[in-house]
Length: 515
Image 1 (spheres, one colour):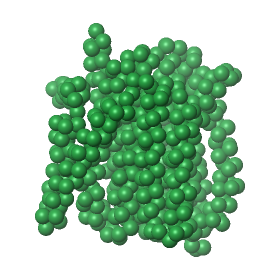
Image 2 (spheres, one colour):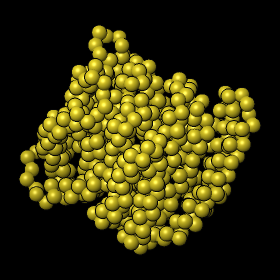
Image 3 (cartoon, rainbow, N blue to C red):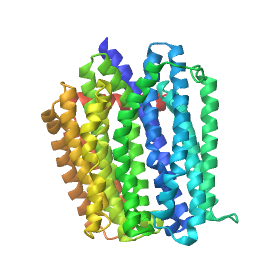
Image 4 (cartoon, rainbow, N blue to C red):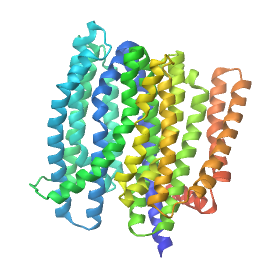
């Protein structure tokens, strides 16, 4: 009987994973094209300014992910309890928290934030008026994204992933439309693009409200004074927030440091690298989002055997998917950037290559964090891990004061993420006794290093021995994913994992193709 239940769960996870994966592919290609259109419309310098100003505001954007994860966790729990009253209280509490938070954010960014932009950032004097307009638009774009949280959390808790996929695709298309319209009106391009992003955010906000209120009984505001619920929501969010502060600091903090030490052009290179980072992050999310609730539920049921299976499969899916896509991109990065953006600048190439290495190192924490969240030991976990992660900015600052190249910002991010991952492994072993570090090394790290080495060597040999650019890129992009997928199945997985992967594929064929 447990095997039948696990099989059903696996099929559901497979369906949701594939749905998100298709969404990820569509949005990734759209985002990559959007960057090209934006750079063409704004120019490299204004694109660098845009990333800098957006970075100042989106230092707080991790709040959306943190609050969404927290609310989703509580929604899911009480959906399982079939307690609609508690779900309504969660929704109402979330609205109250976001309203207060929005006021605080506006006060912060209209005072300290405004001072920082005016006095600390390196921005040409002729662009300050446009920058101020962009800054205001970006603040309120962020506020609208905050108020989407209870609705997106409800969508994920009810597992209506198709709705999320459709709305997020619409959002991406709206941003594409905004990018295409740059330069078509007698308005400063930077200000115009910021205004369009604000309008797009408002439209998506309205869509989420209408859908949530039409389909979910809990998405109707009721006055609530349950202090215990507020405390639970804020406690879980607070420690998860601390973890996100450190990670967002590595990225957005380095944007500011790069601007101060090197100017807007280097910011543009880092901005392109972050677009690649976002694309790979979306790939990882398409794998971990369907796995996370199943892992937490398995822990709650004391079904540690199934939890260990999901943990192992999640790690390997993320690792080998990143290898399969990342290695050919790293090898052929000059051609890719030239075709994508018409750019062959060495800084863009180095930044883009290093960001892929960084995202591989960082993404492997996702299955670990899912189990830690299930155990409830988020406070101790984040205190230990992020004390390492917070070292990134001081390291970058020291590197720049020593006149080291700008790409040392990425190198510091990579080194710190590797050290933090080692700490994560020891934390997981401490809080989840069924986890073995030696087993992790034997089943994932050692086979992964072997497969990676063979894949890089063989792909580089192809790269060096084929002279025709287009033909070489096609062959490398065909060969590398096939090599990593086949090697992962033959070397990187055990019999149980092969069976789970087979069920993933079989479920998709049965539901989507044979229907």
